[in-house]
Length: 241
Image 1 (cartoon, rainbow, N blue to C red):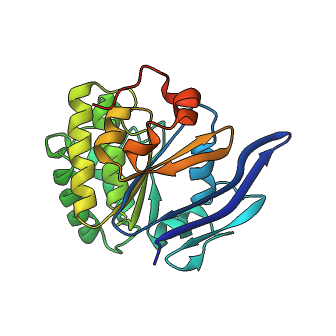
Image 2: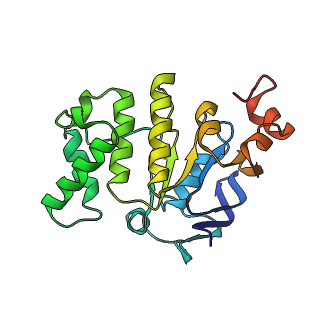
């Protein structure tokens, strides 16, 4: 049974069709990447899936139940959780307190929330920054904090929106390892990513969007050789590492 089923999603902004009959299924335990040029509709799709936008048409099923019309916090409570392109922690709060806030999605006491937060912070490699205010973190550390906050909600499906953007290759490799470990712990992952090094290292399937349409879907080695994908996004010089 598919964990997430997306059927014929459409979303228009005036005369702009941001999503044009998008269909996709995500199976438990997978890592699936969504790629495509800027403006292709990738983040709009995430916004629709997580309740920040309502589609004009289509259906969304998570764990066999329709989630259309639910609020973002309700969808989060079901286990469908996302990060954002621009990370926005509570800047004046410490790393620990940021994650404690997220942990209250699952627990009901401060002691439980703190215990959960400490575990997650250690897992993402931020233990040495536990007492540091978020506004003093570097971008790579803020990215890890964003991951920690999502993990504190106990996601079943974690949606990552350009989590590798703006960081160097060494930190990218660290995030790749961390995402693999998250997946090994039983979390299904759907990621939007422009860093093809990360896409190729992680994804078992890739879906490609262009001008709001899904132009292809398949195994990474197949998709990256597709002439449509090369023309629309990758370019002739792309090589699989």
